[in-house]
Amino acid sequence: MLKYIILDVDGTLTDGGVYYDNTGNELKKFCTKDGTGIIAAQTVGIKIIVLTGRECYATTRRLKDLGVTEQYQGVKNKVEWLKNWFTSNFINKDDVGYIGDDINDLAPMKLCGYIGCPVDACTEVKEIADYVSPISGGHGAARDVIEHYLKDNSLWNKAIAKAYGAGV
Image 1 (cartoon, one colour):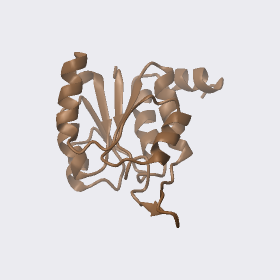
Image 2: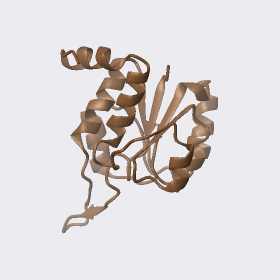
Image 3: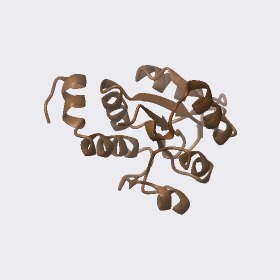
Image 4: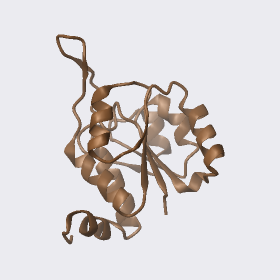
């Protein structure tokens, strides 16, 4: 079973669009359905880690709302970051899943044991993915990948019951 799931933000948790208000603040739209998947994973002991090349307060705020404490923004070299993280924390690649969508996720994905992506991910990512969600990034794709993984490991019902007090 995975111990960690690494999530990209732009194009995975969002639709990839970047919006600016009239004062220059960057805004992002997150799908609440992805939050359900993140909470479900956390409930069964999977640590969520966010690794993104951009820095944005909206990302910080959304992840705080979901209880995601490990978020690494502004990471320009995801491969180097991931290799250092594996080494310094004695982590085995088979314990790590990665959900991403674009070419900058391709090399770090190859270092992980499980790969998922949205349907609108680039071709190269879809070719190496263990699971390609039929849902686009920013519209619940991360939740779908997490749900698919948890169901494959008979953990989805337990996660939902524990997180929301409901059986499926």
